[in-house]
Length: 270
Image (tube, rainbow, N blue to C red):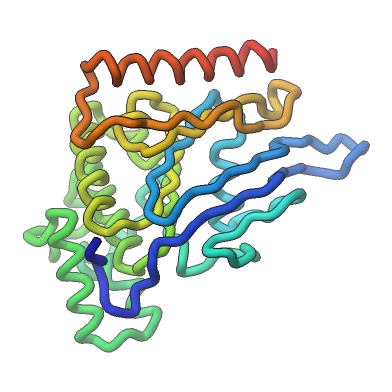
């Protein structure tokens, strides 16, 4: 698949978690085991979604992969390299767009490549191509405050893509959007993923969104608030062709199965 960027763009990377765990505080001194025993392999170029009840460790897993906080047990690697902190190989998109309000859309997108000291011509080419990819070319000179929520989220995604990440990590990126905008953004992200081939790990509370987007859905259960460490309950393949019909029997059977796993996970931890 073509890459949005230049010839130096990294290839999509694998993610591997082995017996991954996270404890807050010291054992025996009021510490909390938030997550334990997480084993997960994400193939290069795969789109994996993570669902589960609040507090089950979804965002903790993503933050550990991003390098924002360390694991206390097990190992986590990207492209077979141990994660020791944040890195340019991993781009992160949050629900909060995190754009620089004093920069235009094109300046927000160009910020990362400029920080990497790419030549001006390369920065310009990358910015132009990413703007086209997210359909914002005519808004290049607009400021974030002049855009709708959905358009701002497109800019946030574009800014990550401009850095040519091998892995894109997304934590509830569409959670604050209205239903129609959210659906449009799901379609946009699916298209971008097909074109770039970037490995994606996407955390969401929406089971329907998880099935719409994913090659596989990781269902997590437990969590510190339930007294059971967060863990993977099941990984569900999504053998549906793109584009997906959310009204089809096959789609809704997958939704029912995943919803039952989430609810069973809550009951088992209660």
